[in-house]
Length: 144
Image (cartoon, rainbow, N blue to C red; front, side):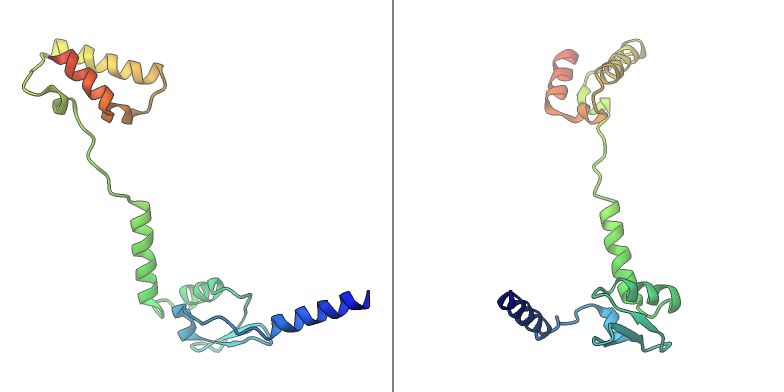
């Protein structure tokens, strides 16, 4: 039992001797860390904040209390979020893309469009199905 307690103490002391990670976030330009007290101090307003090993609360402090203090970081974050929210979209093909040189009268075109829409809805198929190679081949055969 005493042996296990010694091992635990040794493990704890090994962990406290580990070197802290390198501060790579730009928010550290605006804060100083007191690791023993587990808090940071804002260099701008001298406020003390609790530090839990993450820079999230520090970024939020800068964003809310010191608007523009880390403008480069905010610009980078907004560019990344815009890129993630708006993936490159390809333009959806229209019936004209499948028709080739053949022209349909409205009396022919409307029933064909309605039957395709009816098939998609009844069979609960995604609208993107019309872009699949098999569907395009089928239309080509029908329209030729």
